[in-house]
Image (cartoon, rainbow, N blue to C red; front, top):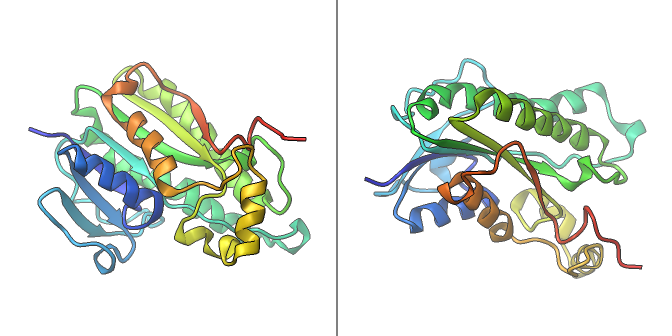
Length: 235
């Protein structure tokens, strides 16, 4: 029998690529996302469920008795000068990125604990470790996600591993306005040592590695998949 994974936000972008990788290996994916059924159809290997992860009272009864792993993919890109942010902007980014992840993990935890070995994958941003203009709100929210990753990895070991992928600019629907024309794409390429912005599959391949058994001795890590942005500067 194949394994079963929960992918929250598995209908577009990185989550969709991760779903495709997992199902291509013959395993099953439970996709949970807002308006999920409008964007992806159920199949033999994929079941689709609508849910608002920011709602602490959301109904997660569709989860199976056992899960071998989960990934929480939803995020936000709210970029502007600090003086233009309101407290509600920070609260919304925390709600989407941190509170949503907490709700999903707490809902899935009983099923994850029933697996012999399970894995949780979260997502962060290069902006947590490298100061970037206009990123104060999302960097703060994802910084909280990184803290959650490390603390949970200690609390849930050895049965459940917890890691996060910290990405840079990636061509997903969420980043569409940042790559909306050729000049923006050229600028996005130039900012990275590898001279290109990311594609969903770049991030999804690392997430698939972390959620699967081949990474069985890795936990508590924030792994940069960022075209070199976090560590390399070409002068």
